[in-house]
Length: 136
Image 1 (cartoon, rainbow, N blue to C red):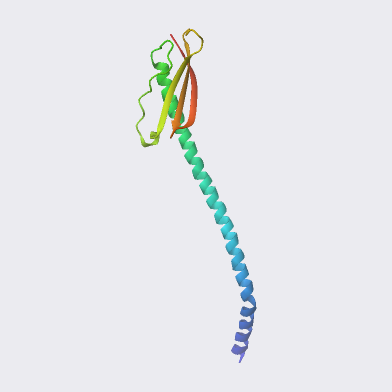
Image 2: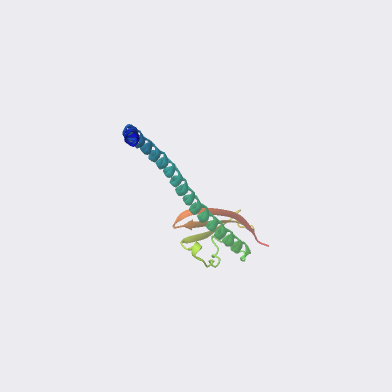
């Protein structure tokens, strides 16, 4: 008899709480969804930032290599460009290109040239490095 009373009380309790449990579950799922979207959004932003920083680091490295190459080359009066340094091997430098543009600082060329190294990735300019070369 006592067991029957307890069972009836539990049934009433469970019946009354069923709607509350559903609402609690929906609220919990909504909170978890918001947390998941925030986490995944942060993860996406971080991965994009890593790609951009990696592209800039590779372009900067290539620009410094080309600048040193141009500065160590023989001085050519009234030059408009210098040849490129040998390209480093490695998968990270694929689809990059560089241009070494030269212009005399004064006209006529008095032995000082402005060197501009432009590095592009898929035809998008990533970095530009400016330096000067002196005829010694």
